[in-house]
Length: 308
Figure 1: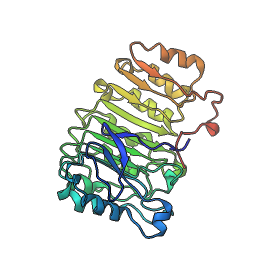
Figure 2: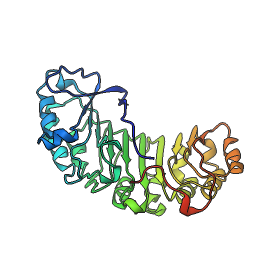
Figure 3: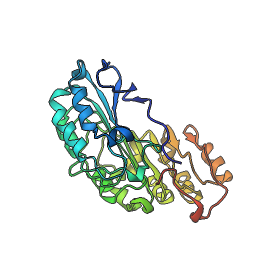
């Protein structure tokens, strides 16, 4: 599966494309992007951002989405990040940013070249939600913020350094942490042991949703989560989009902490029907088991949903 659909809402707002010269409604989430033809003509996302800032009403924007900035993977996101940082005084109400809202028809997720995203957190002290797509070149030189409640990093392969940065982050208001771990074929070189700083429970006192999604090593991740101290305060555990089989599912079934959740999302999995039935009986936990692919237990034929 590739990411084929654009987000239609972000930060609780309807997503609309920004068109230079047209009035904007800051009640919406504005999406800035160039298409292939525009890039060939020399147009850049940074030019569009400047046009947006010059449009009446932009000072009230709360949610901003950055789509494609190039189509041949020759440019990383550093210029975009720098432009957003420079724009901070002109976007005093910005609370949510999505860098890399790019779908399959625009660019494969593994082709998206990111950079150090941490300067956004410094420039926008009132930011509440940060979402990033693409693991290539992605890093957080620091990961600290007093207001951030949602951090989402989507990748076909998430670098170990990013996972470790999340585990040492200083994010006291974080309610939602979502990491797409991916596969080592596309740079996902973290191990389940690298999740221990997140799972041991001393960080993120307000965390209620933990998503360790799209993991080729989903069985190992599930076993680590099943024994995690942080389960005592979570309401939702999301291990969806991965290659989860019976081994990881049985670890979840044996966990006392899992039975105290409100929701356990395992959709896109390789769990056998018998074990699925046991998971479905975990009342009152709502367990999502749709999109089962249990025809094989052979690791060579199990895959996470999003990779290339």
